[in-house]
Length: 356
Image (cartoon, rainbow, N blue to C red):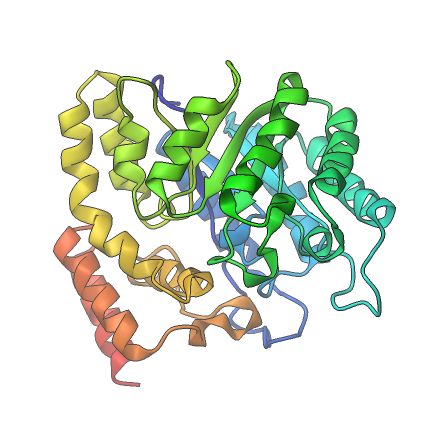
């Protein structure tokens, strides 16, 4: 079951193997059964899965060999149920902090290698922002060169990715613009030149007005996928000039609520859609509060409390990314929002965790 009115992907987290070290800098070891079961849950609700993305700890614990296996495994699982799947294409197999910035050719080679993996898995490619490209690019023309090469190689229309520096400080200045206005013009230039190869752009700037302005400037047929976990209900609902589709990390913990809201939207019940999701915005804003890149800790904590996994451990030791006060407030907001499938289980698990 997919939704008729919007194309929606939930960016899914990964479940660490609790028996493995999974310490900072060590290879990621996943609980494959639990990781893939969670993706099946998202598909069963009618949501698409965005895999191997920021929510799956790309660049924050998930190494490329494990990412590659995740893409291949998720591709097979998606085919088995006819589930929609897109996967992140990046350059994170390149060793970090080289003596000198990588060349554009090296960056393009890294991107192409990952693009091949994603397309062979049967997934739609999301061309993720690259830390290596952010460090190497001298201006908009370098981004245009690299993306033209990738779009020429893509076998089907891709989703571009604009992840703001609140999610990853290493991406400051992406698209080569000195400010966000210039960056917007840079990426719009790429989209206009290659519109036939671009399904849409996923925007995670946490700025509703800027997203709406970009949405209105896109060529016909190119979608805006909101990645705004602060303002998602209003952006998906849209206005008289259009609406955003969605590729959201917040739809990992709020999958059931998102599906219920989207069912209402499919019938034209915008007020009902907003009535389901608007009360959950304070919860979303808390999860994604600064420092925003640690939102993954809250996502996995809620998965544990909700019974979707049996422990609260993360690859790279990222379960320590938020303190007890933050997680306590998160539990209370989730409880007030009624998101737990089994409130008694959530209470018992939180009590045990908070007393450790």
